[in-house]
Image (tube, rainbow, N blue to C red; front, side, top):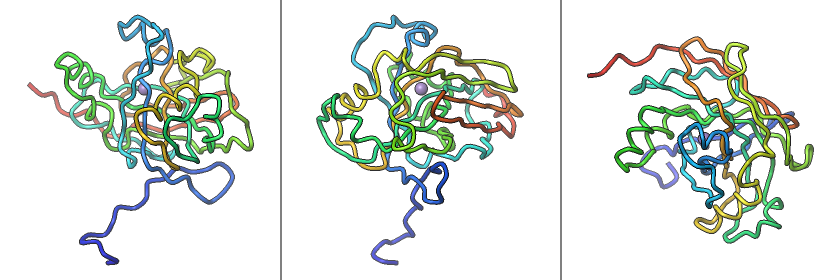
Length: 237
Ligand code: MN
């Protein structure tokens, strides 16, 4: 057993485009309200306050193409299309003008959200963990190394459900850019190789239902697609 009383969990990972080796996931950080139009639809002023973060467990990741079961304990299961940054080199107090040196590459992810639980948590001042960090809550398409595509600063980001456009924006509209997000996160925690950062979602978040086919993309990066399966949890009193 090599010193553990139980078999250690497998390393969570995401596919890398074009090669068999996978990106090992250490931690998933997510930025809240990073596009002005989404901040407004969530009832907030899109002021340029310092970005705030929440997290998902590493093993919430799944590859694009894997079915997503409709999660338990919600009746308002939402999509949030996001550019994902994959960190190759760690560090604390990273300067924004050096931040891109820490990036391995980029992916397209969906920050799946139990919106009803999130709203209840907000109203009670409680943590968002079970609204955001549930099983299979982070589908991500294959990560593309920055060595191949550079560091995208603009490009269309969109999400369709059953072929109908639900979310659209441009990653240039982010209130906090990728270098700024990396710098700010690293003021609070030391980043490390394998960290993923979801950089926030444009406007148009909306509910998903079993049978829905979701396709998200970021111009110049790639796409993610999955199908929602199963059935909503039974109504609760
Ligand atoms: Mn999000």
